[in-house]
Length: 405
Image 1 (tube, rainbow, N blue to C red):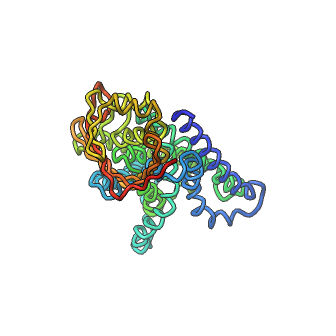
Image 2 (cartoon, rainbow, N blue to C red; image 1 turned 90 degrees about the vertical axis):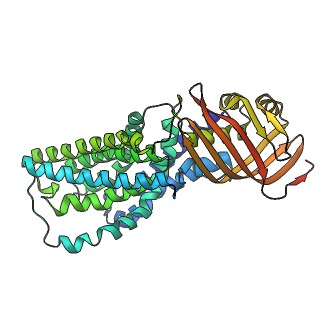
């Protein structure tokens, strides 16, 4: 199966599991069973997308790490922390803009909750608790699905496409509450559009950091801080007449678009955006593509990823060029049975970069099976508009165990 067909199959499996599971969960409420059970089940259900990724990826790729699918690391990189701060400011800005403009145009009234001080103390703990469940969703939406959709498509197209899937996934839950009278139908529709618009900012966090963690934190803030801000300071939206309700919602949607655009406008100034080549891939995503090409001996993909003047030093000290590497894969002399990446660091600046990764590999080299832990160091450059490996090396971390096949 080709890499493209594999990715397509994984995406179909992921969507089938996520939507099938949420429909199964909500079905009792949709046919009239009291929906109270959904209050307990929903936080657990938010891990359905993460579970779906595991079920979609592992049958095809064995026990390889899910890092490339989840985009769950690096967590501690400076760029990730900068974007976490940026997405926090963006979501607070959305709440503030909606409230201030809403009060200014008269669609809502300034009416702070008398217990606002005590409630505010709970916002951060609730946000941290919300992060536990939001992470499960984001591993699926802005992790796995974003990686599959982004490719050479633009940011806005990807953010809206992933956001539309995310919003529709919530519909069975919203409709169940609507059918039982817990939510008005205008709230069901308004919340669905809210999710689509919020996905722009969550997607911007994913785009700028190359990691799912800013999106997960932003998701947690939407479920905690944003709810608090829009209910504790002004007239609750549920109490507004229809005209005021939709105007207030529209103000929020405009604020989401503006916040996402503002985040993207800052990426060059803050040097936080990973450089993308003409295919739309960042360096991390290109390294993922290289690993997949090595696993599948996809010579065409490798030819596009390796520079013509490549020099790569093998563990025995010998140096091979691009032609020798491609021939080894094409002839079957070198076959990677498994590459399980456990760690990676990435650095880049002005169209050049480097990656250092540690992986557990199982391979067949000229008829002999070998298993070892390897450290790969690769130097990258954008050549002819595409990220390509220009130099690199492989080192054995532990003693290789080799047996005759």
